[in-house]
Length: 316
Ligand SMILES: [Zn+2]
Ligand SMILES: [Zn+2]
Image (cartoon, rainbow, N blue to C red; front, top):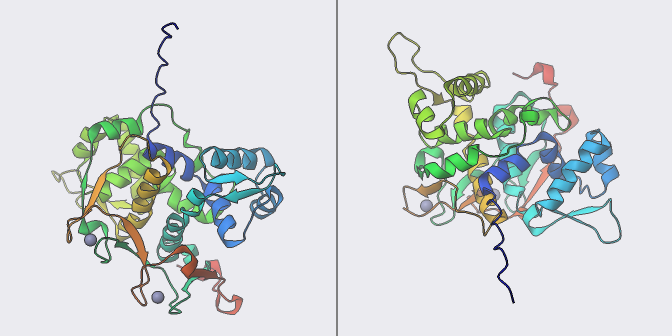
């Protein structure tokens, strides 16, 4: 027996950062969407449906396998299945779809979500699993750990490639402004948590004023934030637009999934609680028609009939 040199612990992966790096990507969301809606399983299916260059598609599929979202089918290197963790992304995708449906120009031509039990057509709402009530950003309180924010925004991170146009659905362009890179995601997340003043963003983020100004301007241009008072002497404030506030569902399900994907990771995410019932927010989706809590198999997406489909040019 001899005393070995203790293994240096691997730097802990921040669950939230890893989740935004993985899923805050246009092609990755497209791959997952097609796995649910088109039952895409084979490399060639995704390749035909997305038109992505093979090397790029291959890299994204490998990243999804490494993250435990997809698994390679036995006997075929080019066939993949969603794992249980992969299936758990359905609520994130439904929230992304809901936001696009209600807040983007393309919304009118997206397939419609149908609740099979009651026949209701249209987006669901986030709800608190503890008490069953619908929740919005305004109904919740958020505690942020500053060291967690530091971990989230520091360290090796993916380049901001995904907010540049790349392969995948063009329909994901607008949501990428909010979740396509860590800085934008964190600034949007802080705004959802109630942060408004330029100085407050700067203080919690430890970010250079130049970068912060650039990100805030970008989020204003994307219609996610707005500046209420531009008058002389007005505090430099940023508020969420209704469109920005509607991203709440996307964020709470991303955060919930981050914990599921990294059960042993540092507990770094913001703690969100539902003010009305006082419980930590465990989010679920609720049908707007019948009020039922939805499971993945309770819903179906139906294409909008071509006859009633407005052309993109005539929308908005
Ligand atoms: Zn509650
Ligand atoms: Zn229903």
